[in-house]
Image (cartoon, rainbow, N blue to C red):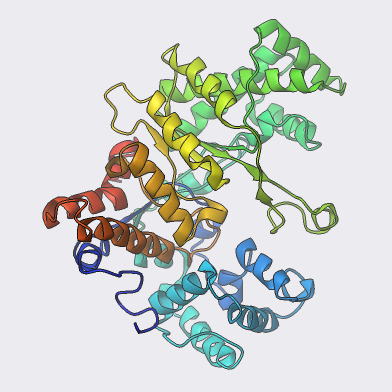
Length: 470
């Protein structure tokens, strides 16, 4: 029996051990998609206790706590931070087979040097030990990033953001980590949602433009892309919960936009025409600037109306959707590709049933002399665990080039989430090690090591148009 989460955790063969410790372990982290708060980085925030840095905003943990019968008071409510922490400790002991069990203990080990297991009995001692360390100089937001060997952080930002924190961080010569924005225009496309008109007023204000028709609307969005690009943005991101595609002429979309501003209801076909035309326009702009476009496909959000009214979005009430993906996605990518306007693109699916759809889709649109131009993104959200990661990498290896994969990202709001890269790297090394041990791939350690290092870091460096030197 192996020791619990020792130095060879998840490494179940000799080759895996060699690959991880000699090649993967010390590679830097290129975190090209996350939800960290740039203001907290800019202000080098210090956290008052482990609950604030660990449980605040972490809907993975919140879902598990609800499943364990924990009252909402101890999750998002007004209970004390210590009570919330002990409620999490009580829940964690029930997380057999859940990746939260591994993530939690990796974070305790790597940041706090705590190798005890967290449960109701050990909770008070671990609470005290963590908080004592959090009061030290090297447990601020910036120091946690630096200690994690991170070179690039790409946050997720609305087009209306003035990016003041990114600008200030760019001028901070004492912090050598690139913190760059990502253009996330979901509110510009999801015009059927009730918050659109208020967001639209914000777009008018920040661009200082008189947006009276669809043409000026697109020019306003273009101006925000220009602004983001000048601040250092090189990626966009879209929550494409439902993949849509409907051909339309400009005058048709102009008519839809007029109805939108007049607060008239839109038919589904009108809405899809507006979304398709707008997303294609943005994608062409990304292509012009050499950006990478990310499409996150297949979330079914805010399922609990009751809890959405109480807590709002992103609080742990989302799940996997099963909408049709292949045909509309193919038509969208093809529409851009045939005009030579398809940017480098990363496709993520939340439904693992779509792994082979995306794994084959990316092969349709490669080219331009760019290795892995169209990427099948890392196991995302509910697939961000051992089985999900292995399934995604197996599909990519079977159908494309795993060696060109740009690898892992945190997709997290927590500054303690970087051990998830270690978790991924161990799984990657073990998977390739299994193939070598089974005689399915040659045992050439230097060559295998270069593949591992590329997936962990170098492929991302080469894929994204970001200069690492300050």
